[in-house]
Image (cartoon, rainbow, N blue to C red; front, side, top):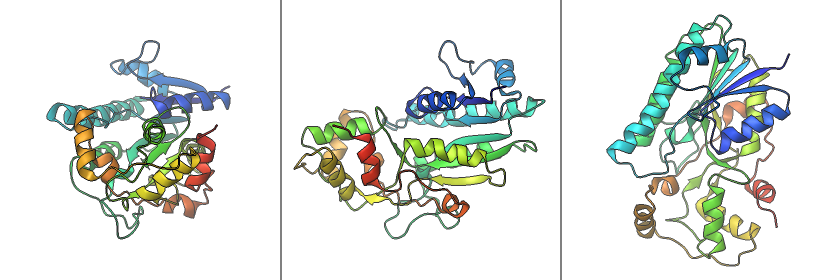
Length: 296
């Protein structure tokens, strides 16, 4: 009998990759989303049936934060995370044979802007502002459930790098058109993780029933924005890149309807718990990650 994995909200860059890879590893993958052919979010009984006798639930649901933070978008960003998590939690409670493991996505943005020291699970300081409030509410909705037969893990995921999608598309376009210079001050930290390590971390946690709670899903070697852009230019063989000061970024963000926080916040996150548990990153350094992502 195939192992059954349920992925909720998995129609984006990360979810489609996980669906494909888990199927190749021999798992039956059931998707919950708004797409035709998937289990619908308003089908409570269908969700419960999908979760029955599954070995793992992976929840990635949540509207993209790549937008302007007006009141309507703020409400959508928050509700798309907390309401779907509440739906899944109730479905797990209703199961006779619930999943053994529930991995819920969270975000490394939950930590404060950090230029002085790295943020770990034990010693990291929670920040303030809208994005942090969303992250806190998301985790609170997740851990509010008392699930005696289901182990719960919240992955505070850093910026995900991988081939064929995600943030690599706009970054590669910037470099390609000569705009791949320093963004803002350039010393803000950039915490990242390769897409393949997301899968490997999930498989690692599945095999370790002794591990639960919050885990930082980030490379152990974050870089500065200056080094990020330098390595991108090097990998793409682009000899120059015009810098973009903060005021220019703000103007551009307004035009393309996004927020400069995505670039200017210093995310300095270290995966202390994963390292202590013995997880070995497939792509621990940015040069190795970009070598796999950017091909001639």
